[in-house]
Image (cartoon, rainbow, N blue to C red; front, side, top):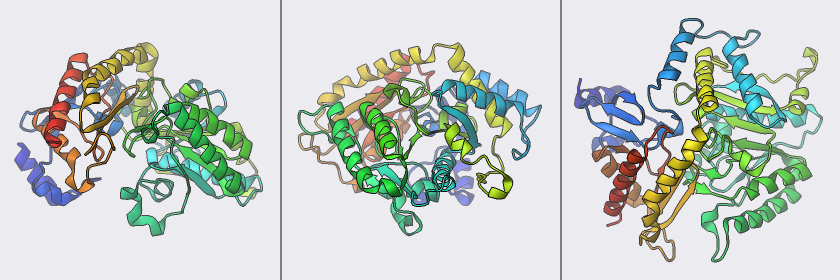
Length: 448
């Protein structure tokens, strides 16, 4: 089979996510036959460097031998079993590992299917907790401007990216929205830390007015990914933890995209020295192999549900594939790599290489900012550098970068006019150089 044969069959039956399917009348669909390390290969033999970790999930390369072997062994022993009233060793070992890796207060692990499901679990647990302890008024969630937490209705309801949220607004619960500490929005002379302090004042004012009706505040620690890879100072997380304690609301840390080393530490919250009440994990949890999510929470929350059956206080959220042994086995193999190899130390050198290879873009007349947090680097394209006036979204400048990159063997998937890198951790410095050169050439073409 070649690419053309595959695409013809695909477009006859499949509906792809996050895609205007009519685009594929002129924008090539790329069928992938195999992957190895940071490389993907199509049916015509063309290779693509996966600069976005296939939607931010892949940590240690495609077809990683260690994770593949663990998955094969598990498939030969137990592929799945009902997780209500039954358990199995991979789930137990994974929960123990995650409890040991996360802050000491997070002692209970609830397993779910994917990132959106994890957010749903955390929101429902928070709301249900307050109900179980006799406080019925706490039913609203506070989010941040530019927030993204998933596509299911509950998760979408606490998001703030209009492109995803607006078509379904009549189905969604309305959150209370506080201004993001996004450092891109800083005034002249302000530092990232200054913005964080200013936005904490805004959050305090909101909680002062609404704490009695708020069950939780949800944030993406350090980087708001789908909102344009907007980044902020860790001081905001530290101050937010204090505000949540003061006003008696839960803090939900959505580390689905930023966990497992993406920000430079294993978990982003480490950089603020804080523990959330709920920690949502997915994506890189299995190294990019299978959908799996975990929500870590406190014994205080757990005890609010631990009661006689007749009380009807149990948490009844469930999925058919909760705690799937194959996903748990992949996750355990992923955590083994972190435990036995100097992953975070190597990533420091890789992050420095990404910074070096894009440093010259800081002076580009159509680049407002090159920003970076750990292994996430973003380049914000603008029509005018001085005023930071954005290109009209209808011009799809980022798509031009995507097209150029594909033609030159790199998979980039810009977010609007934000070109970003979030590669697997097995990328080499030479491959980073290639990735950056192709992106820079694509940017030059896109803004010409």
